[in-house]
Length: 84
Image 1: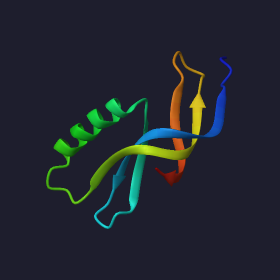
Image 2: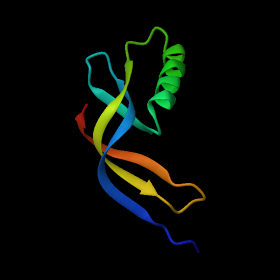
Image 3: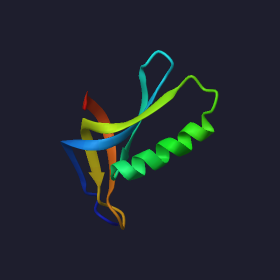
């Protein structure tokens, strides 16, 4: 059985954020870089046509978790502390 290694830390990262019509944060997703974030944002915008939700890419200070148990490390945002 593989040993699970999970590192939790506070770091400034790029996130794709989804907001509802009143501007409340609904969801956030870690992205490796701004280019990846903007690509995902364009795809989401096309799929959400007519929706009152909005998306934004940007730097955020967040509590992140890095899971190194698989073949490639996976980073996930646990909580956004501050938007950049």
